[in-house]
Amino acid sequence: MTATAHALIGASLAIRITNPYIGLPLAIISHFIADLIPHWDAGTNHRKKSLLRLKVEATLDVLLGFALVFLIFREQIISNPIYMFSMVIAAQLPDWVEAPSSMLLQSLGLIPFVGRAALWAFQPVTYYRVDTALMFQESVHLEDWPEVDENLLDNEVLEKMSLVN
Image (tube, rainbow, N blue to C red; front, top):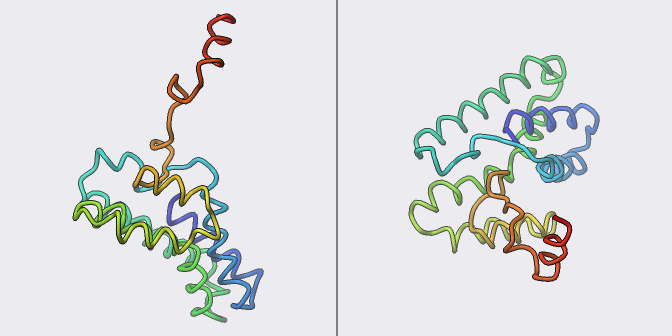
């Protein structure tokens, strides 16, 4: 999901939930809930992009998110700007933690060490995502999801499918 979408979700939560002890953890959890929806973002097709292009797209996405939050929620920002932008950052935080593992750390060959540690930190929130990311040592963008093919089906299912066809 784009950083812009996560920023708008975080800002929307900040308006409804004014207690930071409740709001900040919910903003982080909202990130994982939003990421359950198949989506695209700067990391989509990351194998076909240069590291520079990934960084530029990600930076523009984050800046657009902050700009839209400022434009849409400017009246609410005046009353408590620190809390509003803390919620925006909290809603984006899991991607900020994961981003180095999929860009810089992968290029340095350090993803098995640092990337796993960063993903492990969020394991209580989303076991499936962490498990999948560790298995592929990559992000779990839609393009990285396995296709349904014969390797994923056992022989019994394949035989039944061939009888139907």
